[in-house]
Image (cartoon, rainbow, N blue to C red; front, side):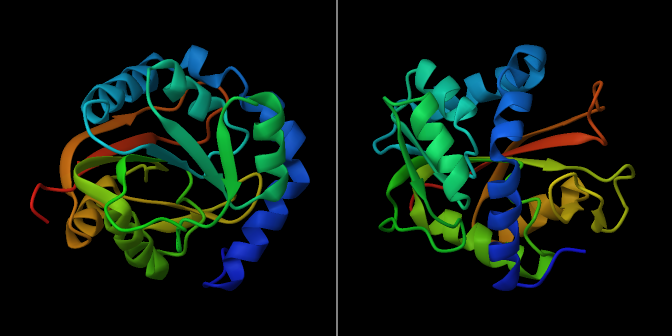
Length: 217
């Protein structure tokens, strides 16, 4: 089972350090086989491209999605808890910026980002700590900026959030409606939601929540 903060951060970083190269090889071309997620990334890019400020890929791993967003014309950089993941990202994508950091305490001024991507990067955050993490994303988003949040969904919409046996370290599956409520409590308004059945090799339903920081907040 995942740990309470702050202990879980060190556990997650060490776990991903230990599998960084294998993880990078496994997910190098994953978007080639995910047309729905590519489409949502394109929508995200269209929404944030006209806004001032860069986009942060939070929990960027080896940087393959960061590079995809750069290919869509975004000024984007990556942040990851794992130093080994960041080293791989810098080596594989030398023209992009990657830095070690935590999504719970970003080294960014308020209202800086036009967009934030958290693609399956909050799944290891204990439920009690997720509101603070979403509040931190809200803090760094500019008014009108967007968050695209990927997560593992429960099999039943009205199920409770629960742990599951993630291959790297402890993680949580969420009912999509509960994450929408938490995002709203953090000041983010849902724009769209995608929930899809798992493809070969995936271990559960996949979900994406697109939310926006309203203007004037």
